[in-house]
Image (cartoon, rainbow, N blue to C red; front, side):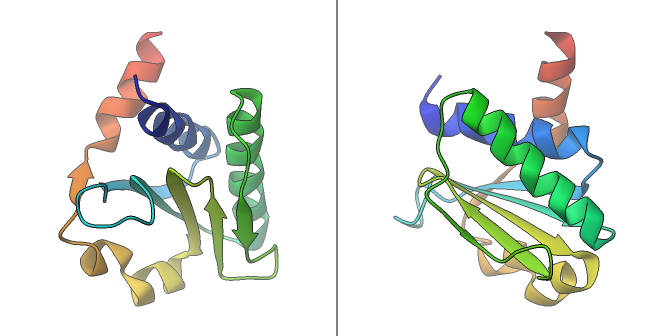
Length: 123
């Protein structure tokens, strides 16, 4: 398994573990040099947003992947975690709808998240 795919799967499962809303994955490797995957999710409140981003970082760090940079904090409505090969976006529900990254990156390929979560449950 390549690093980007493993990182993406870890991030998805970390978000799912903390009950993120509407997790989506877009494979942008063929349309951008920015990263291989965007992982997008929403949080229902600032505390959940902090819990989601903290859990993603803890799980990826535990797996040996380091955060390159972070945009936003617990007072933000959008937090971006950049791990070079993947970028994790966590929004408030309102900003998620407003920015609509899925539409902006529609040339990418959406990966079914249920398959990633199901694979984790089977392990």
